[in-house]
Image 1 (spheres, helix red, strand yellow):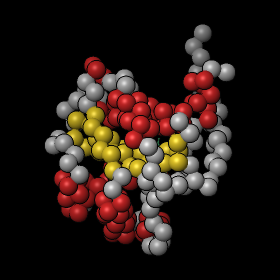
Image 2 (cartoon, rainbow, N blue to C red):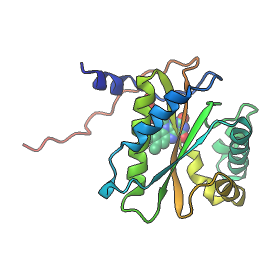
Image 3 (cartoon, helix red, strand yellow):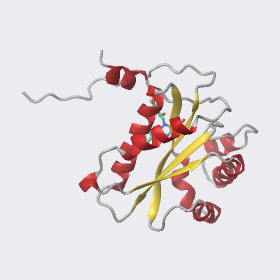
Image 4 (cartoon, rainbow, N blue to C red):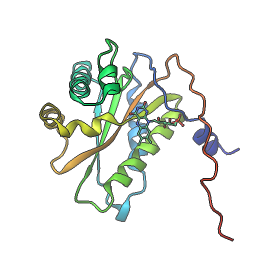
Length: 186
Ligand SMILES: Cc1cc2nc3c(=O)[nH]c(=O)nc-3n(C[C@H](O)[C@H](O)[C@H](O)COP(=O)(O)O)c2cc1C
């Protein structure tokens, strides 16, 4: 099998990470892979916010915790009540991908960038996982203030984020793929 296909099939979403941050060279390679994703009309309407500062990571965690606790969703409230609450699984690196709302297809572009970054990480034996909850940050006053503090460009919204770090103790199996999702027109 080709190296690329092998990498695609091997990548998994990791939910535990070592504390040690990835190297600067690894981080730059992952970001570069994100920037090399295709984008509608080549607008490249993304912005990458890389967070490795522990105090800021804690602040994001606390903001998400408050957001979950105030939600009407009993499952989210239960999750946020845990002492160990960390929607990004204590990963040492969190990369937020925001996109320009004025672009043609910013959500698709940002998602492709994240996909590239996950595959780049796997090729370096670095674990990763899409973290969705940051998309809701803008819905609360506290979250909106945090977005400002993180310097996310004006008119950009968060389309996704990725946790990155050396693989921890979990060994995720590839979930089986749904059948019947392909139609061949002959
Ligand atoms: C749009 C999107 C949102 C996701 N959000 C989360 C999330 O918030 N937390 C999480 O642990 N995994 C999240 N995932 C990871 C999926 O659960 C994971 O990709 C899926 O279970 C398949 O597993 P695999 O990535 O190992 O193939 C998300 C994936 C996508 C594409």
